[in-house]
Amino acid sequence: MSRRRTHRQTCTHTGCTAHRDIEYTARRDLDDVSATWKCRKHDKPDEYLTRDNPEQTVVLELHPKYRTNLHGETVLLGNYWGPEGDPDRAHHGIESGPGFWADAKNFPPGARLIVTARIELPDPPA
Image (tube, rainbow, N blue to C red):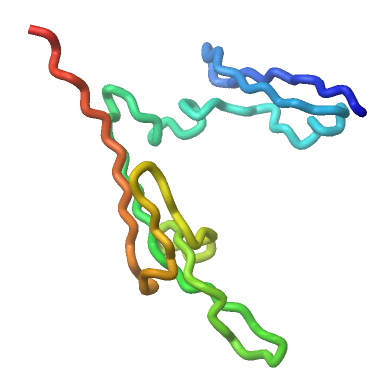
């Protein structure tokens, strides 16, 4: 049995000390690991909720996907959630999160799923 090792990678954003640990058995397992990895906070800062950015809304649209069968006919493969106006990036038949589950089978193409996350801070002590 191969020995498992851990490679620690630190966020490449200046001054950030966030890190991730990657387990591997052979050095070649690390060949596909990006040398410029950034933590979630620095990779997509607009999506990171903070006091200055307490709310984010994402809109997904239900897109139909088609395929060609053996007879050359175009047939519906199914409906998939993806970014609005970008059917090529629609890949999920089910979207879920805390408190919701949206199955594409239950909605017509063009339906929009709007998900909002908002942080509400407590009132400061008097």
